Amino acid sequence: MDVTGLRIDNIGSSDKSQPGERIKLKSKIIDWRTAPPDLASLQEIKDIFRSGGNIVFPTETVFGLGANALSDNACSKVFLTKKRPGDNPLIVHVSSFEMVERIAELDQELKEKLTMVWPGPLTVILKNIGVSKIATSGLDTVGIRMPLHRQARKMIEFAGIPIAAPSANMASRPSITRNSDALREFNGKVDAIILGDEPEFGLESTVIDPYSSPAKILRSGSYTAQELEPVFGKLELYSGNQEHPTTPGMKYRHYSPVKPLYLVENILEFKKVVSRSEDNVVPICSEEVGESLDRYFISLGSQYDLRSVARNLFAAFNAFDQSNYDSAFIHGFQEEGLGITIMNRIRKASSEL
Ligand code: AMP
Ligand code: MG
Image (cartoon, rainbow, N blue to C red; front, side, top):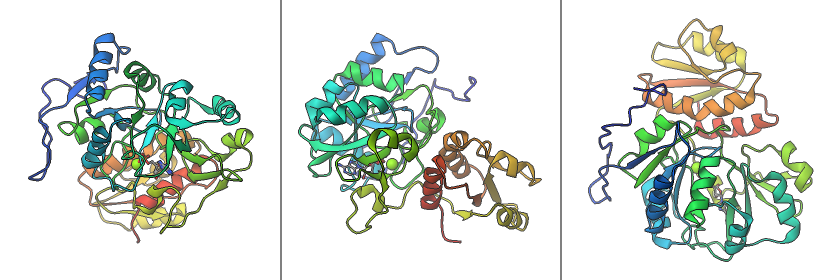
């Protein structure tokens, strides 16, 4: 057992497939937690991608489930493995502008703007000219992002192909931000899992449509509007048409633990509800709130450091699912800056009280 609590020798299959599903007994585990990417493993990853395989890998936002974005077959497998609805397109990850220009239309003005925010947790919707129609769910646009995560970028650069990768979680479940969760959820379901630097942001990329006027945020994410506006001008938060969403992913229930999670926005109210609750209920809260509760709690980090709350949120949901508790309460955070994305994810993850 090492410091992260992970054993990577002797990993058995965690496959829980239903009859008729594709069954893989074991995934290749590539461990970049303590050493930088080496040539042999980079070559192995390239071969897997080039032969149509799927790989789980860390990024600065959440873990991704990647495939060759140029291949219909490889992208289809991603949808199958995740049980993702076919009309929810995949984000395509690139390592250079040269790679963007091979797959999408990009004008000089937008390219200059993107150099100010890429690499980073921003996805832009462009006209598709090169990636699989399976990846884009048949749309004529493609969502593209250049990750900040060094290991992810190195992997894409070495493979030499754009990598389509949605978040590595089963559809509707919380995203994954810890090596241990990636291993538990995907060992046996994909060709390889890369263990590496865990996501420093912890929430998905911000998705924008840069060509609408004004430019629109289709999904709030790790980059806040305040951080993007100096580059893209005033951004409008698209609140969505659930029947005909511009970002198809908006219409699905998302990020939810298997067990019920209830949001009590007001902190005083939250404390009252928790104090009246049974022992099988766990509070998920900031460190400051937790310290005043006098019972076990799952910590989201300091309330005054929303970056730490973002980094811990999905790990907390996954820890709750793995625990013996039957339900959980979570409190609200101020909806400003990163708090907007945090509250968006909490609302989508929680059940009606
Ligand atoms: P995920 O990969 O699970 O983080 O989700 C990707 C998000 O990007 C979903 O909300 C998708 O609907 C959105 N997305 C991906 N490609 C497009 C596109 N071409 N147009 C609009 N939204 C997109
Ligand atoms: Mg997702």
